[in-house]
Structure formats: C-alpha cells, structure tokens
Length: 195
Image (cartoon, rainbow, N blue to C red; front, side, top):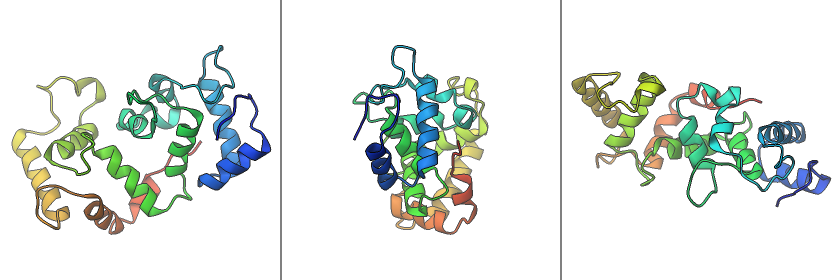
C-alpha cells in the first residue's frame, strides 16, 4: 500500500476502503486533511510522516486528554514518536469511526490506556488514566499537582479493580476490559472521531 501522488488513485482508494471501516468519501477527506498537515516540501507524499504536534492541531484531537497516547498507539514509527504516515492516520480514523466494531474500539481503547505497553492495565496505568481525565494537561507534569488526594486515588483504583479484575490478579487484561465495555452502552458512541 502507499502512494506518492498528491491524489489517490482508484486502486489505492479501493484498497484503503477494503482495509478500513471508512467510506471512499471519508478516505478522500482524510487524504485532504492529512495533506493539509504536511509541510510545503512534503505536500502529497503520503509515506512521509507528519509529526505528532501537527496531528494534535486537528480540532478532533486538540482537546482529547489522550491525544499523545492515541498518536503513539497508531504510529508505526520505530521510535514510537507519535508521528503518523497517511496509512497510520487512516488506521486511527478507522478505529474511531462509527462503523468500527466494539471489539476494534475496545482493543484500541485498551492499548491507549495501557501506558506502559505491558498488555495489562495495572495500578500505574489506571492512575495515569484518571489523571488524564482529572488534571489539566499543563499540570500533569507537576508531580505535586493531582486531581485527587492519594486516598481518593487509591480508593478509586481499588473500586475499578474490584469491578473489572475478574481473575483478581491486580490488573485488568484485554478480555476483562472488553467485558466491562460490553456492559457500557455509551462506550461505542463516545469512542469516535468524525472528520
């Protein structure tokens, strides 16, 4: 897959449609938006990477507290710097599309929340998840500033684990996470990005 033309040819467009949950119109719009993020020297060269900071400038991600993690999860960059190729960008949009299955959405949500990439949501991951939701981004680096007291955080994570950790190993694995998500009808509608 891949093209260096500033326009998508019919074969690439058809292939992208087969490999994603996106319509041809959504792929063309994604192509337009991706091209707008590229520097003048890069315009239309889809295998080149757009830096994470430029991806964050999209209104759909600008206020998402997980935008850095989203880019890291979908980036195929070897150093996981969060930069995206056009195909990475399509994968991101596809996973967040209305047409994506709950299994796909929950799989990617799990990966986004698994901050240490160890395949489970442990105490540290859950603490970072809560902090992303409760502390403004500019304050998250300040370790003194927290949205909850230590006791409140500990109690909240204990409650999350009590509710989610079916095998009682102190972490939430993907199947446990998917079980919790299956009981949350609002999850699918809230896990989307619309261009």
